[in-house]
Length: 200
Image 1 (cartoon, rainbow, N blue to C red):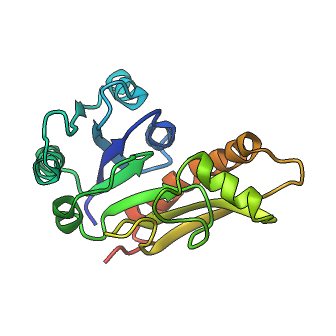
Image 2: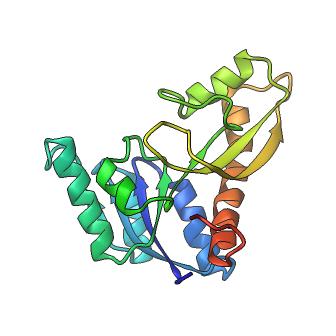
């Protein structure tokens, strides 16, 4: 496979994006961070991109009022930067059909639970960890999966497990899971880069 050129979609902090960029800089991940797109003009992910010298764009429904126009603008930006794999890093919008179709089996997401448990619409951030704790689960973790038209539904590419302790809060569990997210996402991408995970 050609060298991975990653296009990031992020809405807020972009810590998983930073973990991937740091892995590239350390020589652990053979890839190029090609572009960062956010639907939030105040996203720290955009600031991270600027600090790293990566092209950064704010593309949202403010500029493109219809979903179709927004989808097209995001796709054109990814193509312009020769992206061949898309990584969602806390992107809070549903990816449009044009992007999903053009990058079929090339759009990845990381989810803060062990899918297929605790996935689906509305299951993001603290809501996931609350659901895990409320269910009395003994373990949680994170999942990297391919993105399709259904939330948290696509093929699972990798998982890491963390214990859930009796005295855990949403915050303590979230922190433990996030530490593993920062390891798992770059590891899965490197397996793709080396041909150990085949996406088609």
